[in-house]
Image 1 (cartoon, helix red, strand yellow):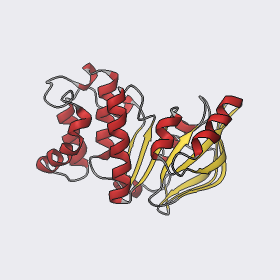
Image 2: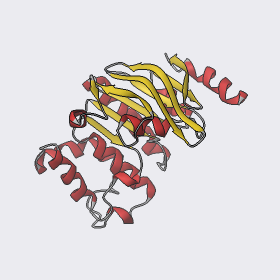
Image 3: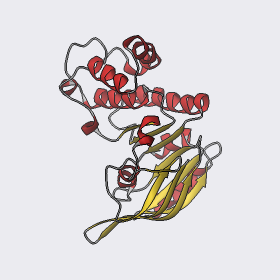
Length: 233
């Protein structure tokens, strides 16, 4: 469970995040949507203790992320390519991540097999450094690295960015099945309403750093509500 309590983050005169209280339940597959500047990435960075809140706190399984690092053992995240070590090959990077979570090479290799279709023959065995890959393949490397230790909590910022349509379809299936099979809590942000409503039973709508709607999405029922909102903007 993730509990957000009186979180505020300002950048100068701009209030980036202002959430009085919000709870994300264990096993939720939550989509975070909003226009550019709505506060999606800032909220994720606060959750991951990459930014210091001006007030309030965020608890992951009752652990204050700013006071204790135990939550990192069961959390996986990919925000942007800054998370990658670009002078390593993908294999070296995956093994490095695995080592952080006490996974040996055979175990990492076994878990990579789940992503074979997603990698589409373009990631493993290419004999080049991560910095020399396309943005789409960097995105794949980042997502896989966030999932390889099978985290209880998975946070992905704009996971569909830079991916071709078939890769977008594959990652949607992977995220949905991962959530269903493991009971992990999965949080994604996306500008793409179709992708979000396709896989997320719960959707949080951000506007100026505030969660203005918490929408239950059954069989894409949230799609029209969201389209109406963004068309009004």
